[in-house]
Length: 396
Image 1 (tube, rainbow, N blue to C red):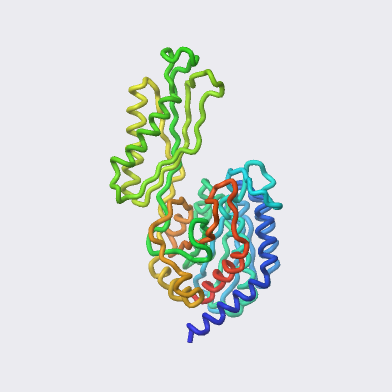
Image 2: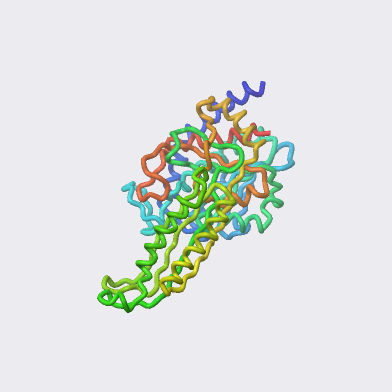
């Protein structure tokens, strides 16, 4: 009976949210046009608070753990532990180049990772569940979390006691991913993201004129050699069956074309899907950098920050999601993630303490995450909203 009921109600939710598509798009475009950095999401949080407060039966709290955090809760008939949804609020430091009429109004910030869509679709889920609040067996919590991008906002909320305050028993997160097929939902048991670090290498030596390199310690040249050597560590010292990526995205040196830099700073990211490989590489990178610097008569420092663990999905929760999800999407709509995605996620901090599941919604778009021309298909907003409401109504 539940199979028939779930399928029918799921279709009803889809129909209802399709009728609200214009509102979903308007929310998404507002967030997109006014992106804000982590811990500074004031316009964003005010809009979310206003929308949630307009929903019948919704309790709204702003400022839990972080000033810009917004949490909504809608009660269930039987009380007990709650199901929580978490979405991110902050933008990323990427200049937008989409040409959209609602493009970012900030030169250096954009929602090039889809947080605008995440927030809009979760508001859609909240609206649906407000309309069907009498059918909810358990309380449902909506966590609009600041500071996901490199600031670990989830830790602030955990330390503030969000789990205890809202009696959270299970937690869900849905992330839109452009390189997965359109409209399909991917997840799996165990690890679904990577162990990640932000890496900073600082080199300091004797600078000089470009015409007299023999009188200087060319730290910029040394940094190039280091990048090559470190890539060889990945290809020659790591088991080929293990996944490991080291990428450098930013380098700072002298600003004059004919000056040999005395100091160079490199920032990059290390990502693996295996804890032991990650530990080995962190130490090996430091060893290689210090040895090469010593040989070149240069001092070096290596610093790791943003130590994100792997998001570990709860097996029982994943099984339940596949069981009921297939009733709505069919077997082709629910897919097993073949291997963890090499993304870092501070959702890992929730998953360490609460039975959780992170899911990925494929958008099939041309440009990847953090690309200057990244965009999302707005016609998926109703489906994402209905999907969340459907899970809230039928997960055990």
